[in-house]
Image (cartoon, one colour):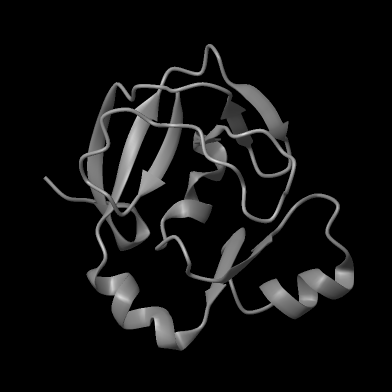
Amino acid sequence: MLYHFSEISDIQVFIPREKQNRPGFPAVVWAIDEEHEYSYYFPRDCPRIICKKTETISDENNEKFFKHSNADIIVTVESSWYPRMMNQIMYRYHFDDTNFELFDPTCGLLHFNSGYKASTYRPYGLFNREII
């Protein structure tokens, strides 16, 4: 299962789009795997830095970022985004992963080169609070 997160609640068909920061890259539909979906719980333009504790993390970075935390993943967002994050509902669309191609294994990002219909979606609030 793959996911696409959006602030838009009623997307019926996902139309491939060109990536603004990659001129010449073909238009695609982007999706994310479950392991990395946490990086898309935020409004589209919200800048964020993600630090993940891995087996290869340096002692210096482990000390710097995880000394005072039991977390394995830390997401940092500018405080000015807090009100918008608390009030923004994100919609998680579900995709069958059959026709998607892995683009970046580090972040679990995949793409599909033609229009794609999502099977279902659910609204999500900040930090994966499911809204029913």
